[in-house]
Image (cartoon, rainbow, N blue to C red; front, side):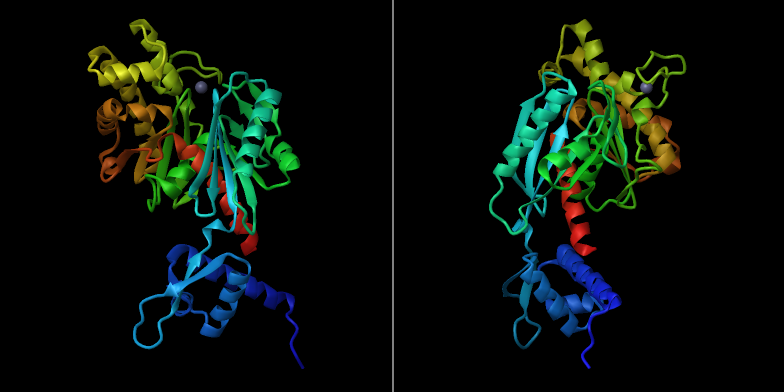
Length: 386
Ligand SMILES: [Zn+2]
């Protein structure tokens, strides 16, 4: 009697397929025999599962690899262009979008200014940007697999933006609206979480298990990576460290607290003080610092001192391997870094600062948009593996 696959057998096959795909994603190029060695699955099983993955366009064969004697093995690669994903970084005054392949390589880019903040207008602009990127995708077996969006606000686990202070948005069901419009899986997350994910996967945090990403733009947000996983807290709201209290009786913050870190160490804080020197944009300040303007350099150093004070608190709590400073202010790295480092040295416990490094975002202003695209890719893999 021939056995029909039962629920259990089908489940085992799915699990094994996922193990084989994972080993191709991590170790390609590699041969079927190497997969068998790596996974402990027998060669016949591996061959049959690899054939399924080839049939579903996720794995490709390439020319023969090195032989250890005997017939040269055929090597396997992940087929990164089996599909594409869209990543969006919704800023307070811009929308940045990327089309990437399944390995995260950037295929097309789009950026536009965002001049008005009413939600209907902004969502329409967002949708146009997504459509333009989708149109740029080459033909592929899976087409567009999903959309990821990083936003400057607090997002719940259903992708609803609960509060975005700088956009003045409350309760915007962005995930649901984009899913209805595009008929694709959509992931919405805070831009600092997306930035942390981007740097962890493709940037300065690659291969580093414990990473705190500090997004220093108009405000300050943080994304926390522990053991290579994004830490989101009980409801997805972790990382609002821009509202750490650093002045007991300090300036009033829009959050209701006094003396929040972002009032002293963000791009806004810098620009507030730059007005007194006659500057009104980060670009102008950077150009003057570059030209040797000592007043501007001193101002940036002073912001760096405040930035370091908040980072010292974070380091004492999390004991990370690295802190990565990203978003707009990372462009002032040259003058910020010595001041941040000095403040962190002065304020952290010696055990914590040993081996801890401060880095600047490698992806520069693309940390969040690359991370957002990765959300879409990882959701696709989760679906095909389950
Ligand atoms: Zn605050």
